[in-house]
Each structure stands twice: as structure tokens, then as C-alpha cells.
Length: 75
Image 1: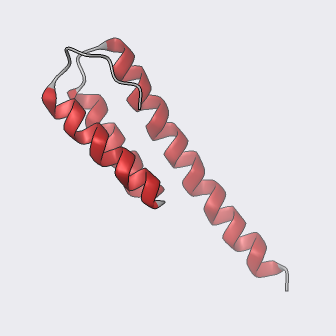
Image 2: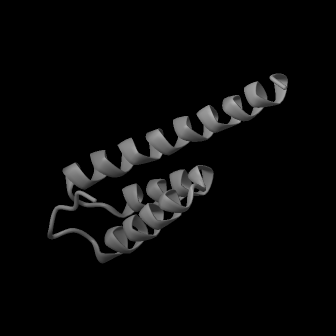
């Protein structure tokens, strides 16, 4: 994870939690926690990072849903 020092401890706590959830593959929940981290961040680089991770998780969730539908159509 790319952290910049001197940020709100709540940001770091939420970012660690979001990263763990993301590794577990729960992208919908990870996006929500990344958004929570974003609201806690003071550093602009951490704000951008958490916003980008949230966007990635949202798109990954959409990709997985599409893949599930496509896999269901092919025997």
C-alpha cells in the first residue's frame, strides 16, 4: 500500500481494513471502506489513492458480476 506519513490515524486504520477486505475479494465492501478512508485523509496523495482504490473496487465488482452472468450463459 502506498501511504504518505503525517496523516490522520483514522485514515491509516480504515486503509488497512479496506486493503484486507480487498484481498479477501469483497470489492463492494472494500469500496465503502476506501471511501471512509478518503473522508479521513488529510494528505492529498492519500485522498487520491483512496479514491482510486474505491473506484477500482467498484469496477472490479461490476466485472465480477458480468463474469458471473457470462459464465452462467455458457454451459
